[in-house]
Amino acid sequence: MPLSSLIQSRRVILCAGSGGVGKTTTAAAIGLAAARLGRRTLCLTIDPAKRLAQSLGLDRFDTDARLVEPSLFRDADLVVPGSLTVMMLDTKRTFDQIVERHASSPEARDRILHNKLYHYVSTALAGTQEYMAMEKLHEVKQSPDFDLIVLDTPPTANALDFLDAPERMIDALDSAAMRWFLQAFQSTGRLSFNLLARSAALAIRGIGRFTGGGFLEDLAAFLAELNDLFGGFRQRAREVELSLRAPDVAFVLVSSTSPLATAEALFFADRLASMRMSCDALVVNRVHLPPRFTPSESDISAAISRSRLPLGPAASMRLLSALRDELREAELDERRLRSLDESLRRFANPPLRVDVPAFPRDVHDLSALDQIARVLVRQLQTTSPDACHHV
Ligand SMILES: Nc1ncnc2c1ncn2[C@@H]1O[C@H](COP(=O)(O)OP(=O)(O)OP(=O)(O)O)[C@@H](O)[C@H]1O
Ligand SMILES: [Mg+2]
Image 1 (cartoon, rainbow, N blue to C red):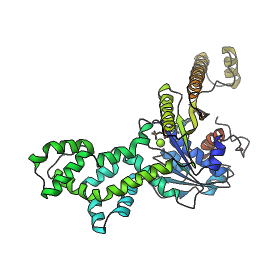
Image 2: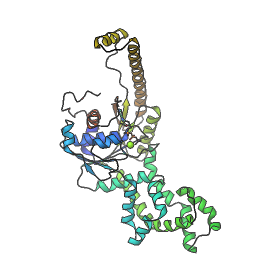
Image 3: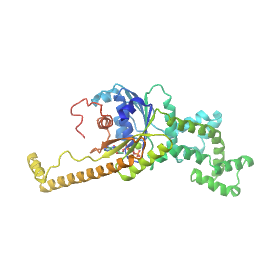
């Protein structure tokens, strides 16, 4: 199914991939494409580059949902019949809201929120950010204000971490060692360092590294409180996981052309297939395309002298060598894409591959984002004849 059909028909599009390949950029470009196709779109983004956030009218630390002002689209010469709302994920705030929703009493809620360890668990515990991204998705999916939600995913080193994260987080909080620890605390009412030294070591391995006096008591008291929420967490994790399996969810994997990134994207697609979910599209970002023309050395020298720029023969040599580098990179990418195509044959439903060219500059304004949107969705029209000049 072409990406335009996915964008027009699905409720959720999740962009995943390894670190730095362009997930946030792709999610924002899909969001823009959807708005340009008339959908009311929410892009749930994670730590976008400062200039990209600014170009969407977002303050970097602002985590409320923000409608991208129609005047920004007009200024960029874009016709946008739908709307684009951008929201930055705030892991800690999302966690707070879950505690507020699931705590057994206002007092229990306050004890958890004010516990010294809560800050660590809600921000730094492995998997928390990914789990909270899923939580937020689950929440906004119920909203009637949006037709489509595009979910960017956190910068995990490994794309697969995203799928495993909720389980990892819950396991860390609810490991056998933790339960043992909790029981010991609850049966004696207080903790003895000597008695619990070994199990505490295990528990600490599960939850992170802490030092300092009173730590074990704090940890135990905190876990006893958090225990109230475990049922809520587990049930919600299951709901969230189920909601990812719904047929209205599309997975878009993002990769660069680097063999490591494509191998990871393929692993992710295998994993989805083994969970009977499918990867709908594979966006290969920053592809080096062959230069449209390859001038000879004398063409370059002639162009330089025609331009009357004060450039010597060394400049034409540098230009030529830059062109040769570009050609080499394009050839390398072409070979890599051919081998990627071979690998994609192993899927019963191979994802659609969409190549996005490497732009000479970072993608940090609406018109650059729109160029990507137009590569992803071919039918989007440019509205100004020179809107393509960056490519
Ligand atoms: N096609 C492209 N051409 C040129 N620059 C690009 C392209 N795609 C993305 N970039 C730039 O690459 C950088 C990384 O992109 P982005 O932030 O989208 O990656 P990410 O996968 O979200 O990273 P992280 O894993 O850290 O979240 C940004 O500065 C972005 O502007
Ligand atoms: Mg990102």
